Image 1 (cartoon, protein in one colour):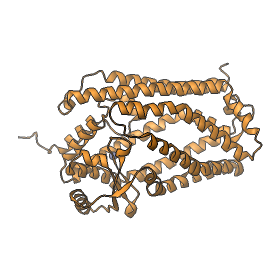
Image 2 (tube, rainbow, N blue to C red):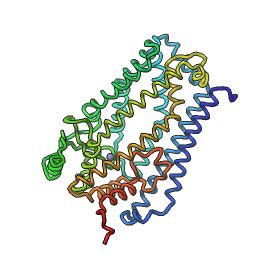
Image 3 (cartoon, rainbow, N blue to C red):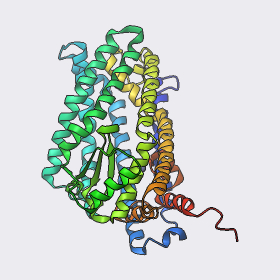
Image 4 (cartoon, helix red, strand yellow):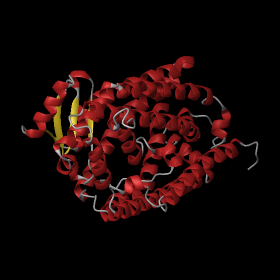
Length: 421
Ligand SMILES: [Zn+2]
């Protein structure tokens, strides 16, 4: 393969991104050999620290195998002429071109799902089970797979068909129509996700009357936050890990607390966690992310419009023709490594938002220090990696490390001027 061949450059790009991931994983692993900083050693018992370390190491190991096998499968398929072979096979069906496209992309998605399946199974039934998190039964797991496949077909199918038709039929402004379609779709998804999709996977029950519900309503009234509905969800069906989230806007807002969260925390801690979620809403973090996501999609569609008509994109994957559906796949493969930088920016912003939400919680929760104890409990119960490496934080972490969050909260709690006599 000569340097002038586009395949050489695409390979270089994809391997470079892969190596970056590997470096991040190895640095992360080295970081775990460090002793725990004193600030954390004061609240993490040696046993939990060791357990969280082993958990992080096991997950890094799995990520390493998964990334390497994914790259190997891609390279074998790519350089074995798989893309051209699939093109021939799908053309053999003599379908309308948008249906050929659906078949082509669908086949690749099924292939990538299957090649990833052993890792997904191992993660749930071995790794998570080994550390006592897994509560997913085989029947729940199978039902989840069926539901997710149906959702992918029912929601993703029409979107893909619409994109294939739009990009093929609408000429010079096709990318603008494509962008508008994806944006409309993601807004629709925001609306249907809490109503129809999440309830398919978990049971939502209104939080029963009692101390917690009353405390939440009192807090919400005090900070004048329209709560909408408060639910508990049965997260314990799949994992003992805890979480909480808020979906929707305004009166449509829904607060969901995992049953595991309620079991592991005091009312004051739960209020602090809730106050953090209210902080996100008050700062319009979700709307800001949605807006930036839309802008990002627009940039991607702009790039798509430039790259789709370029023959090199297809030659790089050993295709003589230039079918639209293959162009979309190749674009995704080539743009992925470049898009890592956008991911870094999004995560940077997300970590900034977490600090803002923490600040709001400290300022508004009835017991400001409860957020610290909530974060400590969460970190211990979920075996959070206490010492992620900065490079891995940059690439992967949407939340700041728990130690840094607690340090920031402590700075907020320190009364100003306490150092003066
Ligand atoms: Zn948050």
